[in-house]
Length: 516
Image 1: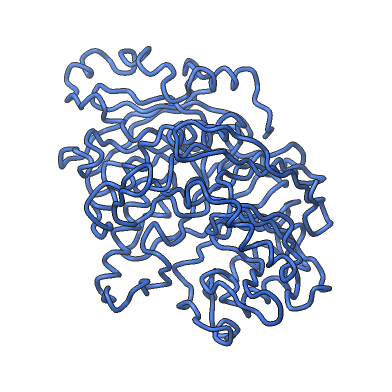
Image 2 (image 1 turned 60 degrees about the horizontal axis):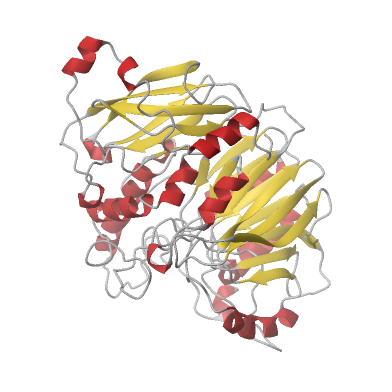
């Protein structure tokens, strides 16, 4: 994979991936008799757009959801609808290499997840859907490199935390122009908060979502953002969730407010939230929820260049600590025993040059008490000190571990230390905590620096901290990772100007981050 788009890919971006060629060949897809007999669907049945995800060397997941009335449960009849799909080697879809028919079922919100196989590694493809006489926008995706490919480069965009009510998703317009090979989204795709009139946009509905239909409506509203839709249509996404896809600061089967949500009620809410998440994400059938459980941690390979370990830091964690002593309790777990062993096995037997860990929450220490003593955010890895410290100890024997995180609504780029209590401790890795797409809106920069600059002396491992909205962009090659912090000047307007706030480098086999 390469970060620089080819002329054909540039033309596709310029033409607008979300609309290219949609109607031109719709009448050629089916025989005339079949077209005449086909029950018509409303014109806006593909209102939620299209997406792809979880690239393999020979495969990709293609996604859409039929929803002519997206903010009212979808608006589809209570019946299964056939959906044709095709994927081609060219943007006009003349060189079709795979096609078939999927079934949009009412029990899954008429969503479609096509797990296409038999593709060629390391190349771009174009795809679309057709149902009820309607044809979807055309999307572009890309497969992973050949399993034994050692060279080349991979451009990855890191994003998280997009709160509809806090602003428009303007960073995606710049991300689209940067043309990443893949987008890694590490949590808070939606926010479950009730509607508020204080921001530039207002959540649909009358309160927090609890039922499946309410979660479906919330996802549908977020999917209507044009910059988000365009980015989904132009690159494969690798996704995982954090807390706001369900309920703020939930842990395992424990809600934020157990005095207001009974266990049974919260388990029912989990099941609804997970099903809506599956219905709206380009993930494989392995992620079909089993009631209040969903399989989200998984591993993706990008040749011998990158192994990407995607974590689930919500379903298996102990409840959050509420004191410093409790945060150091060795019985607390963030990952659960099985996922932790899976991660360690994958790190130690990895053939890849770079071992990336997608963690929803920050792993490096954040000491928010100036001077002597420590004070931590307990919802992050700081609240699970024993497990975090043991993991960092293992990093010392892992080749080029780099953690990619979200949650904070801040850019926080750090060296990972073997022992944060000892400033002279060895550096064992690097962490990039991506800022938010829109959460916290246009933050007061002076207030941020007044709060955080006095903490730098207590956190010498921090390399860059900032409170602008945006995302991080990584160009990964064998010799190193070149990272850029891309930020926008505003999210309270649909238009924004982007710039590079900081440029950093991680050298292969030299743990830590260098500010360039």
